[in-house]
Length: 95
Image (cartoon, rainbow, N blue to C red; front, top):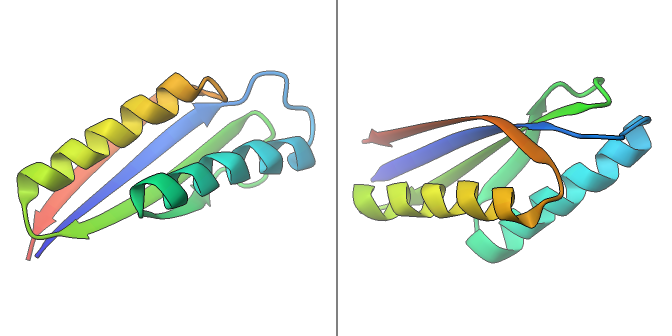
């Protein structure tokens, strides 16, 4: 079994309230859940208006497939243009 996890840190320009932030983060999380069948959640920076940190996890049986999917997710989220990605982190574990 292979587990791939990733963390994406976003900068949310022009976001002045937690309500605005929640709208942006929910749209990103919904997109990832629906299109990539990934487990996704906001994992940190909950009370900061202009930053968000989203964590995700994928499970499979091939390390290369999981790595490829995580790369695709990072690239697709960046191309959405909803928020600026300022940092990404990826880890792949074989059990």
